[in-house]
Image (tube, rainbow, N blue to C red; front, top):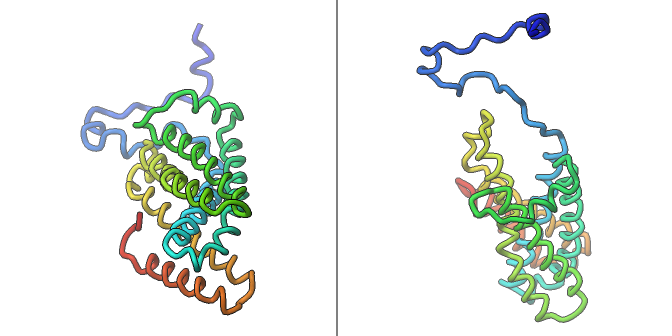
Length: 228
């Protein structure tokens, strides 16, 4: 009846009670490797580029509108394109296309995946509005930019929090990964803004924002820990 069960490879020997008492299952090999592929790395990269560019543009425009408003009007459409690429990679990485839509049926505040899915969805709305309003009403763009800051921060941090809360060896010990990914998103946002400023020409009108962006990036690089 069970003849086929012994014809293949032999069963692995279970750990003895002494081995379990010494280290538990922490030092044993992972029984089932996660189905992650190279897409998740590109997903994290474009997520950081989109959220970082939006946050850098929003904070700089709110802090010094006379200097950064012309740059921010270019940043928001670029961030929207990066976010669309990120969402496409995320859907591919999930393996099942409707899965992202199904996660929006409920909201679980203690689940990093649920919070991140909702942050991405909410963040996409003010970002789309900011990109569309870049050529229209000034005050309306400022309103949607302020509304989009908090979900943008959550979208930048949730992937690191999600990876650090799973049971896989290595990932489970990276408790600061959410902070580091947020810091890297802000650094990439400053770098993207700097590239966009320089690509528009090195005139006297845009050297000033370039110098400010350079100082902001230097301050983050010199920080001893994650800047959130």
